[in-house]
Length: 244
Image (spheres, rainbow, N blue to C red):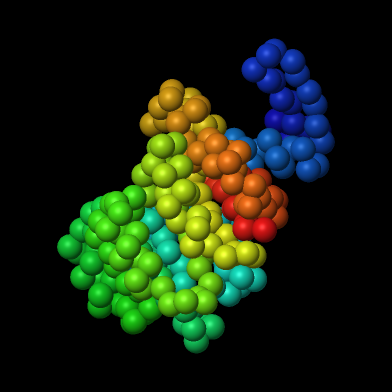
């Protein structure tokens, strides 16, 4: 990168090179790609909280999913993966603004201090916690029992990110999503993080994005909506599946 001539020099894996104006769109794409990788390795997304609860998400992804939630106006968001509960509170805060809606948050382990914090939170009335495996039959039955006929459901998958687990979640929770709503698979960028510190070599094929494309091959009723990831600065590429 030459800050004097305002030029970006790129060297690709196959040995080819290219030069771009530093302040052009292609340079922005390249720099953003590297920023995503470096940020993940340095735990950039661990630095934020939402209304008092740590939220391990890229801020850009939160803004984009907010756009989708505002457009869809679901009655219920089902999220798998709770961690500290920041995402649960984030979705609940949007519902509070709408004066309608609730979150069903599922995790195989909800640590006691996180549960206590969520149960004491001002938005607790909009959050239901289920401590169980997201793919267990009893869990799906419990979730279905919490949804009334005609309610519009949106699903966000952010628990175990192995291909097989995400594929199973897509199969189980996809039928709950009505036309025009979404099931979202987070962290599909794992394939691009296999070579950074903390990454794993099998992430090239063992990740949510691979699960998404395998799911789509047998579920033509869903399609990828590229709009929420249009800027490229995302951990969730190919993650927004809209039911036709």
